[in-house]
Image 1 (spheres, rainbow over the protein chains, first blue to last red):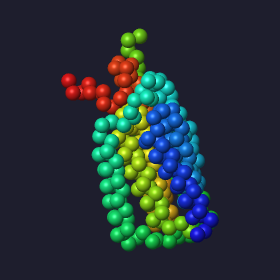
Image 2: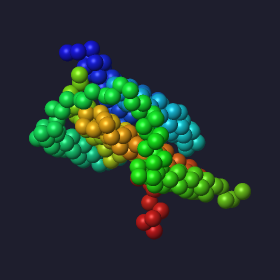
Image 3: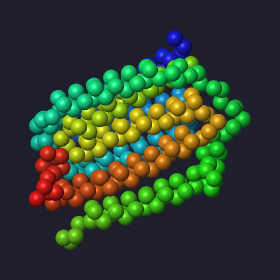
Image 4: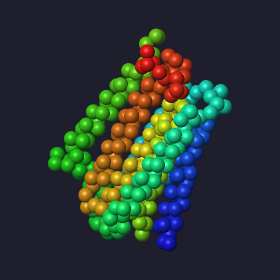
Length: 170
Length: 102
């Protein structure tokens, strides 16, 4: 048991516990706060995987933008008496069953896969991953097209969400 | 060093927790949060495979950034729909969103 493994176990336990609170807590504001804990745990796992840029992007984009957007939407659509009622729909037992089934299926597939014991290769200490990502994103033989498609998608989502949320009665 | 299987099992567990949230929650915004959990599980898988199977190739990280962009777009459009719906119907319970059934 190396210190890294211990750190992984602690982070994984906290993240999974927070994820369980996200799907089971009644108060929606608490749900959003637990979601932030989960996202932060995932960012820590990215650092353990030596993907530092992604960890920063996770904190900035997910926690800084998406989670705050979710909290705004929760507060705009909130009715406090809904906290008292059941938070699950009538099919939640089936949902639990499907979740367990899916998890066992994934475990069986993973255990039968031969690449599961792969050891991580050494990272090239001179390479700068941030520079590599930047160059790959603007390289026409790399991911330039995907990058442009993502920007068009974001613009379309921006215009679309303004149009959908517009109050036409005023 | 942490074995690759730990990351994969953790991501599978996170994905299934998110799946349960999507299928079982009543509130539409809580369903959206379940989708966020599932997308995060996928991101962990992508980064873990990048680190363990092909760190000379930056593909795994670039794909994760694309998932970030798609998740942001999905959340913004979804929340705009729910806010518009709340204005018209006064509810965002997934059980009561049945306008398309008319």
